[in-house]
Image (cartoon, rainbow, N blue to C red):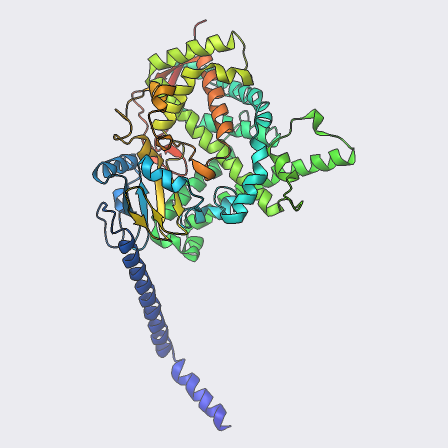
Length: 516
């Protein structure tokens, strides 16, 4: 009885509303104090780690975040910083996140020659969307998946895709005839995105999407746009790095909704293919009636122990390739067409070369892709000026020493500014000038192979780069065969780095039909 009275007295004393609020306040103060202490300790550690690398000064709390206003000038600031801080410089995004930004081939060679994993900040925000596919996975998981997926990009697999890409491009170009008649300006990116999505669906997944002919906005493409913007926003807003805060925010709700749309799209593709494979197996049919594609490789891949990919692994790789296979290629092709519109003399040389290669044909075949050396140089020059993926980052699992003796400790994040390398004036003469002759064999031989890395380099380079280059060649050839591209001086694009290179005001051109 006495124990019961004492217990009730304790409850009445400490659970009075005022005393309870005081106790909660003390707990909050202690938690915030611990959080700040941890932040300051990490900041101190990072400052020591990057002591050998001077960089632009930043706010103690916001870092260099306020330098980047998302107004179309952010990438030029990277170039300016690079001129003041050769090879590499740290950028701060909040009080305890610092990334060493490298922008010279000599430094890039060291990081891209390694198998270091992608960073665990920005790329972590992608995993709820694309899972742990090749883009973000690490270690043995990445190595196993890379080995299992490589056969899906053999040239025997890629060859039949060229005709499919050509047909998809033709659908897009036929829709442009209205713009050719009126010669009004129009935005490229949305059209090219639909075309590359159509191609990836037909080539990699043998799925007739009809996305180019459907009316209204494509839900999947809209979801991808939203997801790219939201991942970028989450990286820039320090509080959104905390999962539960982002989850409870309106942006978190938008992200989950867009993820659901993207996942429904890929799950439908996988479900339909499994039904086809089951039917083929039941009827003892082979692949003779259709070409083996990327999804077939995924579903049938086996390692040395005859173990295949799990359902979760398959969806992650489909989500990854669905996004990377259409969005990065769309960015590349949209900027290629824009660059050629701005450089009519090079555009005309490409057109003459393409007309000679095709010899009057309306479609493109595998063999035609090797007959356009000048056009290929123009494509590469556009990829230099407008890299589809403007940057990437790795997290070091061990110390890394660069050619000049400076060392970055384990645990640090090293970012590769592809845009910064491609416009580095110490590497490229007149870096802002469109000059395809830079890619003549004799000129390429004089440069570091790491001066031009639109598809990354080394063991973790882009597994689908041949697929992407083929599609950009096909799209360029088909477009220049039919249309003359004209720059629109009233709509100058303002480049903005997202997961891929975009423009905040669109990529606009005018066109007119080629006179035969």
